[in-house]
Length: 144
Image (tube, rainbow, N blue to C red; front, side, top):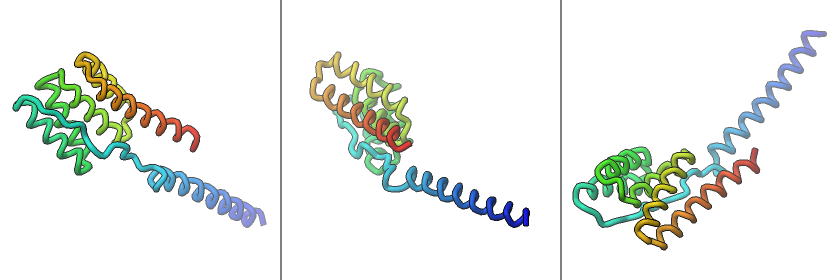
């Protein structure tokens, strides 16, 4: 009789744990967890050396290959570290990969460069992007 009770409890606990884990996996990978916040990159006109990597990054971003986009924007930044749009797009790509700390770092760098340029419209866009990241982070807190 003790073995029957043990097996019953074991099966019940296993079933409850399976349902809980299954629910968490569904919540993370299901419709409630779409990670793509940003669908379009920021475009620029720049010198030819930087433009090739930047354009390749934009193309990778637009087809959803965010890691390749990050690599190409990084190359563009290595060629010219004053391209705010490259930091901006790299931040958006990191956000779409749910690497929010890296995203924020890049968006803030883009914002600093936009301030130096006096580009108020781009500064407003960065602020909106940061607000979306914050909202996503806050929504994760309420789910857990």
